[in-house]
Length: 142
Image (cartoon, rainbow, N blue to C red; front, side):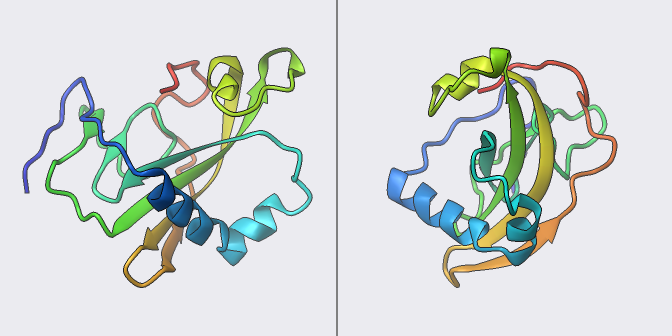
C-alpha cells in the first residue's frame, strides 16, 4: 500500500449518490441516533473519508505523531468513515449548506462511524480521542 503522507492531502471526489448512501448508512447507527436525539436544528459538519485516510485537521482516530495526513491512492472504495461534528456558527447565523463552511467558529466532535458499502451496514463506531491534534485551535475547514 502506498503512503502519500505529507503536507497536502490527495483529493478525491465522491459521487453525490454514493455520498448520500454513505451518510444514510452512517446516520442509521443507533449510538449516533442517541447522541443526536433532540438536536434536529443543530448545525453539523461531517467529514467522509476512505477508511485508510486521515487528516490532522479533522478530529478523528488514526492521526499519527509527525504525520498529519495519509491519503493512499489504493484505498478500499467500499469502506468509508464519517466523522460527525457539531458546529458553532459565527454570530449564530442561519447558515446552510456550503455557507456553514465559511461560518464555523468551533467544532465539537461526536462520533466516528465506519460503513461498508458492499454490505450496506455500519461496521464500527469509534469515540473521538479525548486529545486530538489541533483540539481547541481554529484550523482551516475544507
